[in-house]
Length: 231
Image (cartoon, rainbow, N blue to C red; front, side):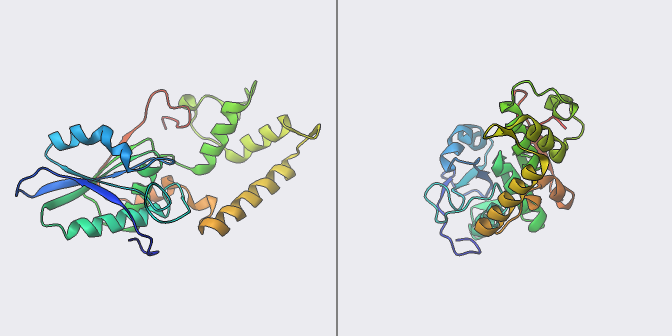
């Protein structure tokens, strides 16, 4: 269970011998479960590692009804680490995360120093506000403002500028939605997230926690990923 006493469900694959081996904790993406780890088993087992895949709280068969895109899931990873440290078959512990699972590993390494020996971070978002803006941009037809250039060429992404531009192009009941209205919507969203999940949108910024992480990490990004910029 995690610090909130939510029961977590996991699967542990290991070579059937007496040797101590490193274990990789697989952290699934948002709207997924530990089943996602099946795609990585052959590779990791062939490298001599065991694999522990857990369902984050609120996902799969684990208890909980709130997901936080990696923020509270960091505590679930810490619980998995504590469990593995009690297993005599495990030597060192690493992490492999996909999407929000990669973000969870960043939050975990920043909060729990020395919890993991190293990590593979596949497709972690940097700032949840940027992701939200990117989704809106991808759905916006004809938006060619400088603030909304293609992500692979972007150096800095200004969420508020993008939101303002989108507000100018949107209509509600036939009337344009001015920026103050957009600000109010963002504030309501932030308050709703804070009330239900105990986290603010400003806290969902793995990029701000990265400097606190000491373990070596390999960052991966798919070339066709429309939501994540190369930067």
